[in-house]
Image 1 (cartoon, rainbow, N blue to C red):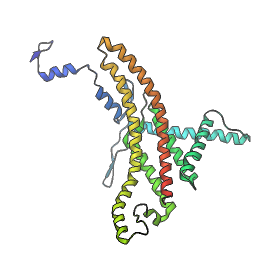
Image 2: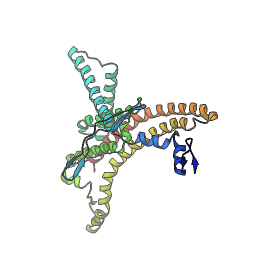
Image 3: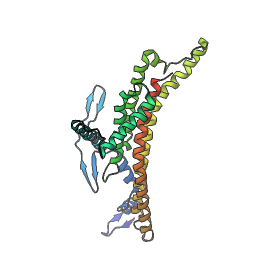
Length: 304
């Protein structure tokens, strides 16, 4: 037991607490950035979001209160609507003028993206009747892309770094995949994507195949959206944690005069390089999610 500056007795727990005061806790900083929260961080400040009482529907309790991931998810949705509203306005103006030319600038980039996805992603992977899925695949791409990119702006949050967000996107993709398969194959054909017995086998062999392959086929349907959710979540979370960890090293070694400038300079250079890499990954992961959804739709529509 020791005495503090005022002469009061201090226990070992008080000494440990006092020693920890003013120190930088890198782990706590990382968890606070990765976890969802009922506020939006604005540098040293924060904007508290409105919170409401949970709503009980039968035995299910749903909390409709806003969180930082929900806010940036809604912002990404607004940017999607704004993008296609502005691009559609440009095309309507060109049609009204009777101009037989391609738009320029941002509208031209969006048109190129739309045509690429229609021809090289949707039609190439789904085949006949693919154009009906083009709006959904394009919406997935732009929505995920905007959520990814919002995490790169100052004080921005990447909602795709939340597993609940990527799981909801994957569940939506699963619904489209299974409904597309049911509509293309009919009840009997769709049932065979789960309960399949190869023709020509002895009835005993068919029964054995059904017994073994039915759970395998059913689990296979669930692993597709699971892989979509985990891949997007892991890539966006890993990049965020790596960037914040490098920045945190500046504060961890801030009291070491010899290493201070070297660590700071190296960390800044690495953060810039990783941020550029994350910019590429933001586009890549949005493309992979949309492309694999188109691939899975094509596979189930042509199950034979």
